[in-house]
Image 1: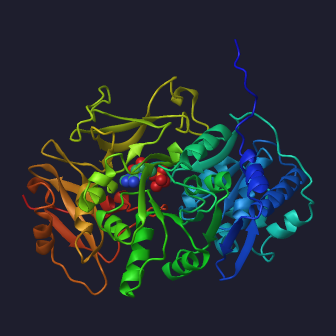
Image 2: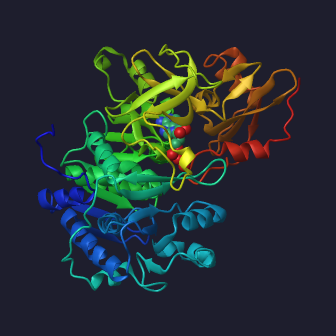
Length: 533
Ligand code: ADP
């Protein structure tokens, strides 16, 4: 017997149709890199996206052809998301912070036919062009000087077009992981996985979005679909505020002027915003919710935000999981907890939202599920309708079997109430005398010291224990702290045998293309480092 309900494919075009129909005038605000500010609306985005559908068809693009963007957060980039996907093409958001070898690899691997880019990336495009033979058409988002401009290109069309129809299981968007080892890998989101992730993400216990929300995603549109924020804003009719540069003064000014209620950014962005305000003795703008993810959000930042009355939504996920899987929303017992306990809870990676399943298995061969006892660390595995099944163009034998779990490469402890606590990456965890030390816990403890701006921890060779922790620290400008003072500070915050054997001070730490501390580079820099026995 079949069920009795209507067929309604979960396609991304339904999101923009809804936003333009039910929230037509709700604004999309862009502050461009040159300081100019423009405004459009959900109805305007839909009209322009339909014009882009016509323009793509005129270029001869067919469903499932790849359309790449190389751009910061702005309204034209948003148009191109709905336009490329609405034409049935696969939108490939290229991360401009990747290295040339990676840019070469992913564009050729994706076989992109069109590239739409910001004029600011013209030098990158000039440099890479000879290595990108598949790209037939270059279009520039914000200038007509280097290539046909986006505005002129879609400006010739009238928007009297239909979205490409198809199945909800069709591919829609391609995002590559930055690849801390080996080549980047492509994650191919589907219409259905995107819509289901969106519906989950809007809920009160996740992003808590509603029509009166004013959302500013600082998470770049080229990183894991800006954490799904554009889709979630369209679904709820939220006002969407974007900024093409990440300087704290500009961001804070925009938040203030536009009445921003929800901000999404990685911990380093939050840190820079808070440091900017604190250095000037000013408070944060009256935002209601701070979404953070991508790396662990230190307790010091959480406390600072909570004291300003901001609800902190610390989330965990990865490009392979669309990305949001767990989020530190308030549990039923929240009000019975004191402030410090609330901060400690928010510093963990939160609990799975509906649709996300998580488990920890033994680190040795992943054969045994570990107890949720808040103590035993294991390899984190996940499952759900927006979790990757196979990487783009993966060999047939790399496809997971039905019902199989995805190995995240993260190490985690799961607490009895289901809260996830990330303790490390499987390749960063330090093995000292057969016992595991979490490099992340050490970094978080160190970052609590008032003179520490940033900290990275790696394992280095030790003649007796095999590996011991080495802590690399960047001091805050004008502040002093010695290795001994830091070790003394850490001594009551972590287990004695975790204390780093050495602390070195650097002017800056190396970062990956997604702004995380690059442990790979740190390990290379300190490959010959010798600890005393
Ligand atoms: P990339 O590897 O390209 O930086 P991802 O954003 O997919 O891209 O990285 C996902 C990884 O980031 C996770 O596997 C995890 O290690 C880390 N991560 C994400 N969110 C958190 C968090 N809240 N706390 C700690 N680590 C996190």
